[in-house]
Image (cartoon, one colour):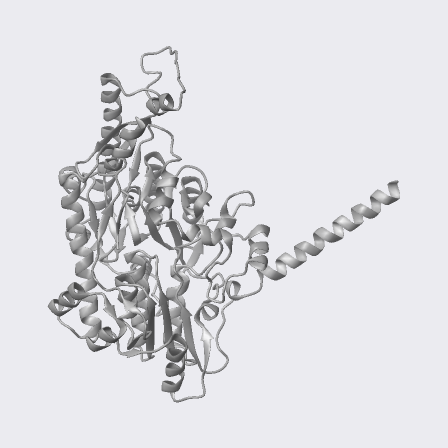
Length: 584
C-alpha cells in the first residue's frame, strides 16, 4: 500500500512539474512578452480592438482577474506607433476600425500617435468597417480613408443620455435617501429624480458643446474643410458609402483586404503585411528613471482588481503601496501618473491623494488624464505637480454624495416584513428598512458637507487657488479638458508624451525622442490566465474571444460602473462621477 501511495505521489509531482513547465512556456509565447520587429520591409496592419485598457492590476489567483485577459495598453500602443514612425522596416500603417467602445480621451491619445506616424513620412490608411463619429474621428487622421461599398458611415453627431430610476423605485415602493454637496453633483439624481435638474442640464449642455467642438475641429483639420462645412455634413448624416465618397468624407470604397493590398502596392517595394499587435508586443522593463503608474478604475479600499462583470477597481492599498515604493526607489526620479477613473470611495480617494502629495514632495509627479479623471479621479490628481489632459477628457466633478435605499416597501410587496430594535438614537441610521428621520438627514448632510470642504482644501492646496475659487469651479460640475485648462484645473492639453516630457524636465532628465517609461506595478500573470490563453486564445490582435468576453461585451460601460458602485456600503461617502451619463 505504501509503495502504491509513493507511485501516486511521484505521478502527482511529475504532473505538477509538467503543468508548470507548460504554463511557463505558454506565458513566454506570443506578442505580449517581447518586442517584435519585422525582419523585412512590412506594412503594419492593425485590427483596432473594440476595447482598450490603461493598464492591468497585479493579478491574484483567486480574484476575478481571469475574466479579462491581457491586451496591449494605451501606453503599449502609443509606444509602438512612435517606434513604427521611425522604424525603417515599417513602410506603412493600416487601421481596420470596427465599432470602438473607447472614451474620447483614449481616442484622442491614439489618434495623435497615428498622426505622428503620418507626419514623419509613413503612409497611413484606414478603413471604417462599421461605426460612426468615434470611429471616423480616429480614421480621419489617415491619408487614405476607405469604406466598404455596402457600409453606412454613421456620422451624425453626438448625444448625451441619462438614465433615471425614480419611476421604477416608485413602482417598487423603494425610497431613496441621498444627500450631496455641490449644486452640479448630479450622480444621486439617477435615484431621486425622473429627469435632469436645471444645473445638471446646464453642465451637460456645456460639456456636449465642448466635445462636439473637438470633433468638428479635428475633422475639419483632417479633411481640409471648414468647421461650418463639417457641421453641415454632420447634420446631413448618416451616409451610405457612395454618398460618403461623393461628399468627400472618404477617399475610396474598398473591402478590408483590398486596403491592405493597396498599402502594399503603394509602397513600391517588396513588402508583406505584419500584425501591428505582434509588432507592439509587451515591451520589457526599461531602465528609465521615469516611472509610469496607470490608475484606472472605480476607486475603492483594498487591492486593485477586476470584479465580476469585468470592471476594474482601483484599490487604495495597491496604489498607495506602489507610490511608497517609488518614493523610496532611488533609481526613479519622476513619475507619470495616468488617471482613468470616475472616482469612487471618498476616504480611499483621500488616502491616495496623500500618497501622491508625499511622492510629489520628493520627486515630480505629472498626471496624464485619459477618458475620465473626475471626482475621486480628480481628487488624487490634485496632489501632483502638473496636470495634463486631452481636450475631450472628462474631469472636475469636485463634489460629494452618498445615501441609501429604503427597501421595506419592496419587502412588503413580496410578503415580507422586518421589525428592528435598537439602542442609541442613530443606531438605525443606515438601515435599509427605514428613511432618514430629520435629525439623521441633517447629520448625514453634515457628513457630506465636511467631506466636500476637505475636497476643496485638497484642490485649493494642490492648484494654488483660494477656497472660493476652488468652490466656484467645483460644486460637482464636470468639465471637459478644454474648459478645465481655462479654469486652472488642468495645466496644459496633451497626452502621455507631453506628461513624460514635463516629468523628465522637472527632474532634470533630458527627455528622449521616444517615450522611455518604466511601468508600475508590474502585472503578474496567473496560471488561470495562461490556461485561458491556451484554451480560449485571443485573435492575433489581442481581442479576447470566448464566452466570458462575449458576455462582457454585451454590457454597456454604464452597467459596469454602476454594478461596481452598488457594492459600496449604504451611507458611504462617494466622490463619483455621474456614470449614468454617456456621450456618443
